[in-house]
Image (cartoon, rainbow over all chains, first blue to last red; front, side, top):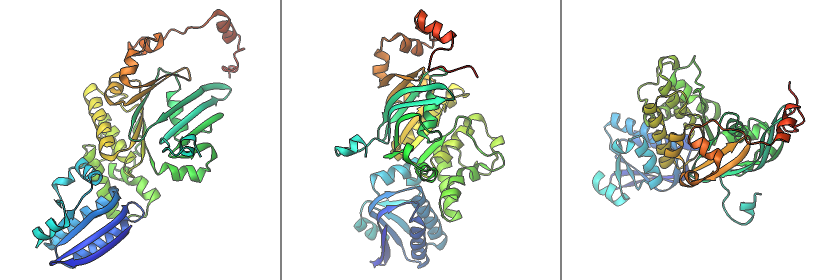
Length: 110
Length: 278
């Protein structure tokens, strides 16, 4: 798994690439919680994620909760069909704000 | 390398070829060949003593075969060390018949147990994963209860939550409907279908419940006295005119069709397959 963090239009865009699974979700968690700690709107770009397992989704849930406590916006961008099915299985699609594209997310977050 | 891999096709998650097993001198599985495809729900059926639970134990790598091969997720179980089988099991979920929850641990601790054993995840991540899986099996908020405080159906669902906590590629279920009333049993069938559809896993269900099999199976394997009697879809199963399959479908006890000589050899202990009375 690779990751990137960059600022765009006042938001922090956290991008992941490859698989987010049991092996590397601790790293994803660290990246996400650090981004939330910067108290800017966070957009998590999942467009290059080929697979995300339950541990990765748990990291997203924990980061969302941290963002809510900090009063910071937190949203997912370009969620793959497979990841969306897993989110829907646990009804988490009702919890997260999900944008179809990064452009949509930046427009809304800004 | 398996035959499928050799010609460039993707191997099925489970491939069993000519599996022969013994329990002491007694032959249990007598040349079983079957497979389970990616994302498929394969129901293994058969009467008592048919060998269906034995087949499950061998698929899980709990026993060593007398002969034949068992490939799970591309690995030949016969060639794996104990440690390698343990590693492979991280990708396999098992929902045991009785739930097999530890009575001294809460439901949440039971569900997180595989994560403690196999990962270095933060406790907070594990707890969220467990709560997500409890949501999936409709046991949200039950993580602090002890197993003794759950009904039979709830124990089964908690067992499912533990079985899928590591997002396995294959889920094995041993008699999931056993001891449950029809409504609870049907809800469990729905859960199996949801897990497959959302997580894309292959699922092997060992059961003798026809209604459940017909509802969830993509394909059915019917075992009879250690041999494969049928493999195919539910519709194909219904069309079979084989008397033993018809008896199974009509829930009739299966009369054994043998000739006099074979019967005599069995009574006198001369059947090689049967061994001696211990």
